[in-house]
Image (spheres, rainbow, N blue to C red):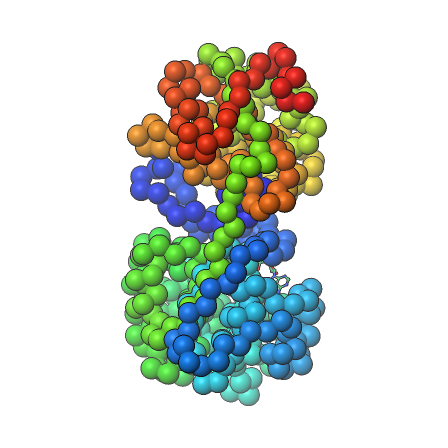
Length: 445
Ligand code: ADP
């Protein structure tokens, strides 16, 4: 598992994270995660639960039956291939479905089942006989709202009387005509307009409010204030559900503004380790030397699958072109591609159509390819001050869990400064990085 392991979103660093490359666009990253996700991410950590009322009993479920869902909804859940609740769902679902309603703040990395959980909660919550909007869900972007809407539609496939409307740009509505759809999903600006300007939704009739991807939301200009404005119009007894993949202080402060008396559920991400990784460095002078070293390594790269990290788009493009000229088949993942193009490249790489993927740091986040066994740092990860960026190093080559497969990392060293960085990384992780002679690859055996 390489890159940002298990496809979590990393917080945006101040400035450029020292990489002189594209900024991490959280919303795009989140969308990419959704597009390439096939199943739940593995996480063996315990869920932490903090109850608003510590004296009330704590329910958790091991099966969907225990939730006593409407049969047509249960059918929808099974039809999606879900056999049992995910870690976070075990606790979150009973809380979200409890009577009287309870507020919830839930945090876990992407891919742990949050979207499925609140989709189920909304579908279960609504009264299909009431032809007005009862659940409001806001997401940071048009595309993310569409993705979540699709989950709701798929899960609600056998609930024909429950209808969903998308409050997203371009979806023009007649002023004042009250919506009949029980669930509305959209972006904060349009949802706010639909409530106030167009009066399509009566916010006083909303009994469940879901705020998804709170960390992405606050990273998007204006979304935080719009969300708070929507929230202000909702009735006091409206159930508030708040989700985030990460939890910095800013997210927490936002949560406190939206959710009173919250129950809190958190699932810590699994730690990555370098324990099963053999690390090397190769001395080179120029980028051409690095390229030669890489070509010497090429046989090893293609035994399994390899990822090569560059610092800039430009370097990644140059390297890809040079490797291609040598007759190697490589894929390039680059920041100028659309999210859909990136998803397609990752898909091809995953399925083994390409054995080698050249990428920049930002792009690789979200790729979780078990089969990658070799990572090349064509350029070493450094922070703004030019020091070793240990977190990024770990994200690129680390693995989660004790059963992480063995792997190799090769670092290209082209100056005294980069040798310094290698030393810093060695010190930080207390793991040796061994010198490798690429014209004699015995060390790698
Ligand atoms: P998150 O919102 O935390 O990113 P999702 O709800 O999108 O997570 O779930 C991640 C993936 O796992 C999706 O492909 C989803 O269909 C699947 N999934 C969610 N819940 C379950 C479950 N209980 N069993 C199996 N797969 C699930």
